[in-house]
Image 1 (cartoon, rainbow, N blue to C red):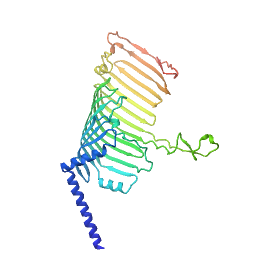
Image 2: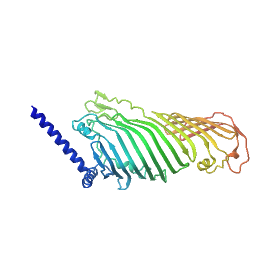
Image 3: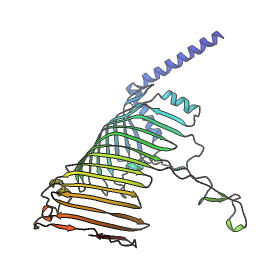
Image 4: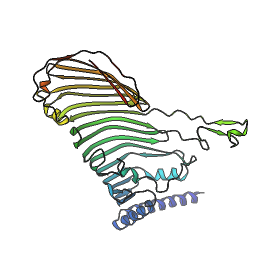
Length: 400
């Protein structure tokens, strides 16, 4: 049996040498271009848009680096280009587990990075970017319930710099830069989880505030919806396929488990319209908590946000929205010099109808500090709750 062991050893060595030779060949420019062209040809009939591999970069057993990608929307317009793409992954192990039918198929990525990213937003006519349709399947097929599950975990996601431009219906001109992204990502049958350790952002020419810059951190968890049971319509099906009018029949009820709760927690610290601001958002299921704090909104910032104002002193603002999405509590505190204004209330939504209840409480409000050509005032407001029922349309009540 010694000869068998020696033969197996020589065979393994030959396979390794052949694989090494293949990798060396892949990194030669003519071979790299040939492989890129073949990959693009294979991907072309897959999506409504196009995913083009412009440069294969360097390939080894640990992954790929220096690749260049381009995405075109269904109309053939370039909407994304990425340069300096690197993915560190021991792909022979993934290929082996895929070949033997591992379920779930785990794809552990140590590192995924992009050096430069350019994104162009083009309105599709409904207010959404055409980029969203680029990866939609050209020939949609129902999901295969027997297909193997895939689990992807990326230990480190990095983005050096991204530029976002273009326009959408709600944003006539988009001009933003993202940089220094550090994150972790996991996606599997349970859903998607992202941990955002750092993202520096700068946005210009925004509606109302014009400029926004700062740091964003947070966590996002979006569990997947459970798949619908096959053969079930409206949550109930007859065991023998007969209609309900055919007499007494056995009924089979498909009990679908309740979907898991979504979790979104984000924190922002930076500049809003040229003034310092902090914001926090936490959404767990239907429960929302959103807070905004601006210790000193300068007169220039206030003028930018509300052009009709003529502020003569900075304003401090604290605002909070908390509660179920259908029943939100509202709270705000505004202070300028000796003036103070507090507001509290609720925003309730029932079907297509809304109802707002608001209370105002103010001391020594000097309108001359905010409005042009107005004499000095010393206004006081005391709370006196009034509300309107939620009828057709929106109801608003203000008390003072």
